[in-house]
Amino acid sequence: MCRKLLFLLSVPALCIIMAFAPAAKSPRLLVFSLTKAYHHASIAAGNRAVVQLGREYGFTADTTTDAGVFNDKSLNQYAAVLFLNTTGDVLNDEQQDAFIRFIRNGGGFAGVHAATDTEFDWPWFGQLAGAYFTNHPKQQEAIVQVAGPGDASTKHLPLQWKKKDEWYNFRDIQPGLQILLTVDESSYTGGQNGALHPISWKRKFDGGRSFYTALGHTEESYTDPLFLRHLAMGIVYALGKGGE
Image (cartoon, rainbow, N blue to C red; front, top):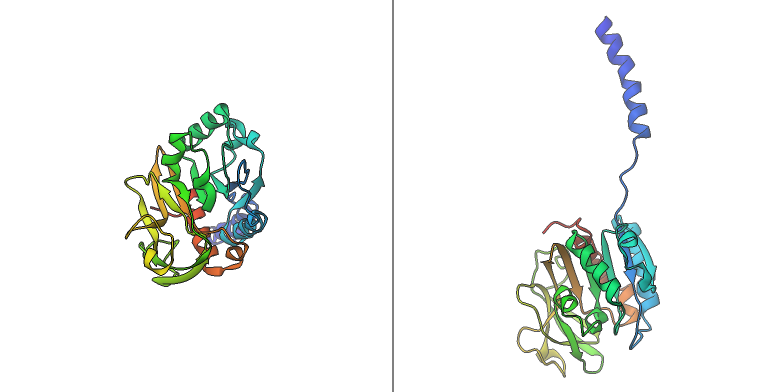
C-alpha cells in the first residue's frame, strides 16, 4: 500500500518537473549581407526567406550588414555564420582574426552565391568558402545535376533539375570538397569549368564546417521550394545539426 501511494504521489511531481524544465535553445545563425562591390537586389528577399526557414527548421536567424559583429563576444552567440551574397572586402584584419577563431572553435560557415565574390585577398577565406568566383555569362536556364544524392541538402531534388540562375565560373577550387551539385555546361553557354563544374559543396575545414551553394542570384530563388530546402539543409549542416 505504501509503495502504491508513493508511486501515485511521484507521478504529479514528475509532471511538474517536466513542465518547468527549460526548453532546449535553438541554435543561432548570423546572416551577414554586407556588400562592398556589386549589390544583389535579391538580398532582402534572401534575408526574409532565411528568417522563415529558421522558424521551420529550428534555428534563430539574425540579419545584419554590420561587420562590427565580427568579434569574439558577438560571434560566440552563434553556431554558424551565413554570408548571403556578400561582395568585396567586407572584414578588416581584426574582424578576420575573430572569424578565424570562431571557425577553429567549431563554428560553421554557409555561403550563398556571391559569398565566393568576397575577400579575394584573404586566402584563408577562399579555402573556407571552397573556391573564388571569376565571372559569369548572362542569366539563363541550365541543367543542375545532383552529385551527392544521399545528402540532406540534395536528396529531395530531381537528379537533373532545370533552373534559371546566374552560373558562376570558379578558380582555386579546393581539393577535398564533397561536391553536392554540378551544372551541365552543355546545357547553357558560357561555362568554363569543364565536365565537372561544381556549384554546391560542403567540407570540414580548420575545426569547423562549411557549406556553399552558387544558386541564389535571383529573387525568385527565395520562393522556390526546391532551392529553399537545399539552402535550409546546408544551413542545418553548418549549424552542426546535420551530421556528416
